[in-house]
Image 1: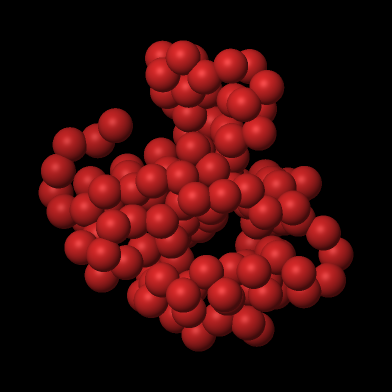
Image 2: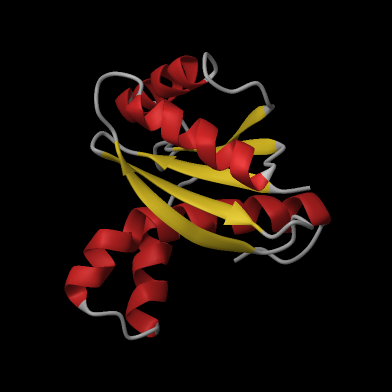
Length: 141
């Protein structure tokens, strides 16, 4: 079962996808978050092209686990997305995913500019891999 993960920010949406078996996650792309349907339509295309069956959306909880303004923004985005896609959407705690993504990119030797461009997609991959590992009962990142 193929999964798609979203790291929804105010300006960009990081997108990651799993392999067809739903075991490994990889960064896919970063989509600008703008008013209007453009990002929803791009995601609908990705979902159709890759036969995605589940969307995992990172939920940016506060450090103490409570919901704040950014969670509200993410949920608002998902309310718009459901008008364009008809597959299950699950939320996953994404605390520290961007920090972990930055660490991964530094460890891999990515140049600073390239890290800035890709960090949201890598964060989405971190979210997705944690979700897949948890679902399978495997190790956490």
